[in-house]
Picture 1 (cartoon, helix red, strand yellow):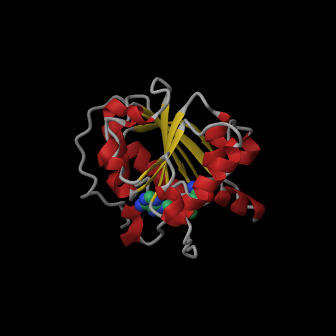
Picture 2 (cartoon, helix red, strand yellow):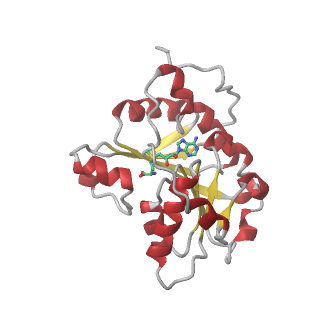
Picture 3 (cartoon, rainbow, N blue to C red):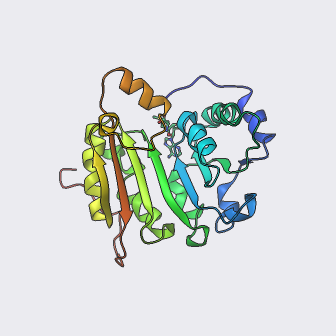
Length: 233
Ligand SMILES: C[S@@+](CC[C@H](N)C(=O)[O-])C[C@H]1O[C@@H](n2cnc3c(N)ncnc32)[C@H](O)[C@@H]1O
């Protein structure tokens, strides 16, 4: 997604008390930054403009969230969307942070107790040599395993069939068990679902949304995802 540069985005983020410029500085210590550190903790990677993030955080004051994206321009929009969704309520249960999710293993640690990772409409990276950049690629999943507890979940939704199909292979390979799966989220009646910007766009075009919940199993895994390739790659 290419967005025009937003001059206001960085200054607004820098002035925002719930923006974290460097997530690795809080690795293992995220709880310190929340008003109520005892609440369950969930993260979103590639939150974009935070359309669904804002709704989710406002609707669930009993959950702590960190929403991450690599682009300060979209994070600026996410900040505004969160302010709008919270209205008069103080924003206490969500932090925004800017970073490349490829380094996620150095932003979160087991002590943080992340119980769920949200991935919505992650870039599909269709070309074989770019697939390792996918946020569901084994390179990522093995990092998620490093900080997710046994039973921790990944909630993944996408419009993209090849990405979804490959993700089912990746999950199986990396010890994530399928807890729930639908190829038409909106027809499935699954709740709760907070509609994201891209979800609204693809749904408007008549594309069914693929969605799955994957749960980390208890296996000890000794697997180097940097050497692994899909059979046809
Ligand atoms: C297609 S958009 C989806 C945005 C939003 N989740 C939605 O559903 O509307 C993908 C988002 O992921 C972000 N992104 C892509 N690669 C990333 C990475 N390696 N680390 C962090 N964010 C990334 C992009 O900046 C973009 O905002």
